[in-house]
Length: 347
Image (cartoon, rainbow, N blue to C red; front, side, top):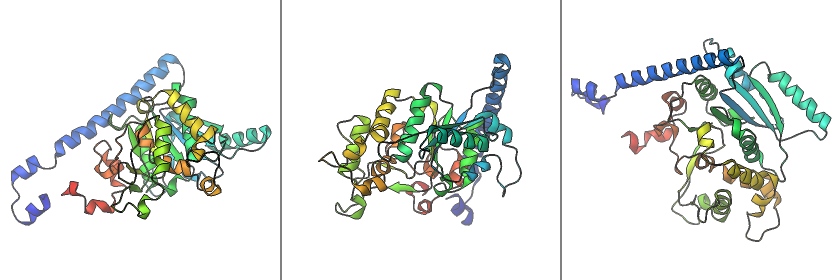
């Protein structure tokens, strides 16, 4: 409307005064900058007083098997961007927690693999830790992420960023990831950003045809999984469009959001997805068997990708990043989706 007024010659001083609140925007940017400065100064003082190295501010929690992790080098610098020094911030404020889903078969092999990964990445981050996770039946990121929360519940950093080892395949731009981690590690994220998906595909569930392809597999399986995980007597419906989120489970969570639920919740969920076959048995009313296709497709964890935001306190219908007022502008601009052209919110 602003551009239309300019084109029609109807632009008045009041449009500028009452339109885009530039002054408020600049004040907000400066307040976040000052917040980050105060945050880093508080860490410096605490370290000086205690004589100890401060704990990390951000944990990168990576579900890993045998993938190439070269993209982690981008946390220090991006070859196609102007040089900027993030090396010291990563070494001081960010830890790498590798949750290894393909462990060697002997204790000696595990130790050699752990030493290899620590040797390769130890100079890049505050801490590098390798934790082997063995599933009763394939559970992929479900058991990796839940194992991390159970392991670190009492010692969580300010933020945890949960990622697959092939994260660049799921994130629209490495800058979205690296800038988010840097901002979180320096105290620049606004208070209202407690959870943020980093993947690029926002999935809209639901359709008008009850027998349509968009509703297949979204009935009994998802609702049973929801009830089992949350301990509820009812569940939302994917086919009715009750739940909307991003696919592929790459996201940032603040510590207080994780602690909205007691550690016992995460222990039960870990037992459900990873330490037993319960999540697979629950796929069918007639329990006690597991189909090969579900194992190869890790069906329970595929359904679970649409519940993480609810676990960490977000509304069931998570908006696109570009429309979410809790997400800072730099995280929105990287991946403005084509749906913005038809969004009624932008009218």
